[in-house]
Image (cartoon, rainbow, N blue to C red; front, side, top):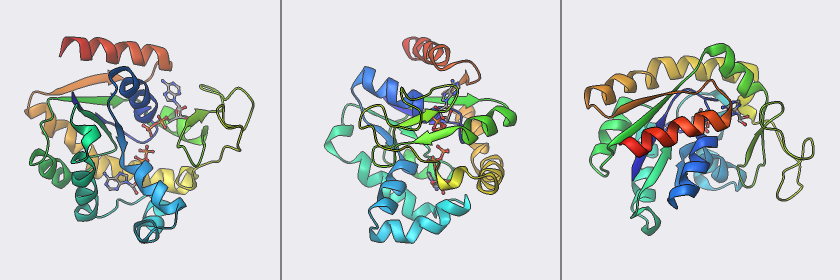
Length: 210
Ligand code: ADP
Ligand code: ADP
């Protein structure tokens, strides 16, 4: 099962990918998480991409494609995987065709107003990437990670200016991927507006039918 979760920032791709990956025992591969892990650990890659992530721009295609090609070549991807946040440009989608066999792309759609609400309330546990929302998916204890009890943070790119930039980057560079996959007959629409359990049920229905 090789899946792509496509959609704007804050649509709930990561939240749903975690659940679906658990169900099917396949890895959830988030390029954003990989970049943030490298930034937190101050690796050479992290130092290279930190200012790009903070600005809301995209990391260059060549670097991102090489990273994903290597990751998909690892043993745990042999049964399948969920790509979350990749591809984000047509060049990335074309490259992906040469090293994967994607037959199902889920496109998460929701209004800009709800996107802004989701991003402004998003809280994350820095070392694990676990994600919460202050209202819609709160931790058991306010401001603390459910598993470790450590502090939750606001991602630096969830600040208002970066969010605006990320949305415009999404519409310019990533939204055209809908047509790319529609033309291949493998795009499935997910209304990402309802509460998490409802979105999850609609994803399960699509996956059962494909
Ligand atoms: P969100 O989940 O809010 O959409 P991500 O965690 O997927 O955000 O991505 C955060 C940032 O990481 C992006 O704004 C971009 O700078 C970088 N990034 C992630 N995936 C890619 C990609 N496929 N191509 C280029 N840049 C990427
Ligand atoms: P993405 O990976 O697409 O950027 P996330 O999975 O990080 O999105 O979700 C963005 C924010 O919205 C998080 O705070 C998350 O807890 C919350 N969220 C996710 N799905 C829903 C939903 N269906 N309804 C309300 N809030 C949601």
